[in-house]
Length: 89
Image 1: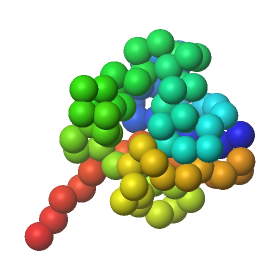
Image 2 (image 1 turned 180 degrees about the vertical axis):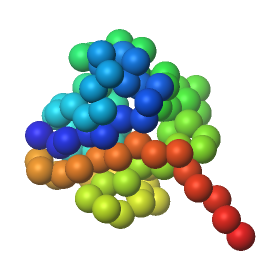
Image 3 (image 1 turned 120 degrees about the vertical axis):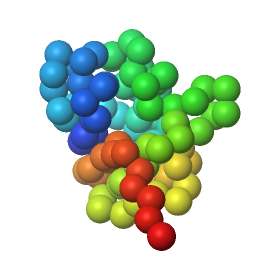
């Protein structure tokens, strides 16, 4: 199952755990399974009305910043990181 690294605000729901293991073949499925185990985590990671990640939040799967967001594929042994997006110019 994917290893998921969580931002500090979600860690308040996991008893302070920085990483958890949850099933999922896409980022959306990972978030849905996080919600089942840690209620309230979905609203800290995604805008349900927009059906997208929250603005200012990036997802990195296996070291690559995702351009597909919730649709990004996640492998059985993947690392998934939810990080504040960093802009530059």
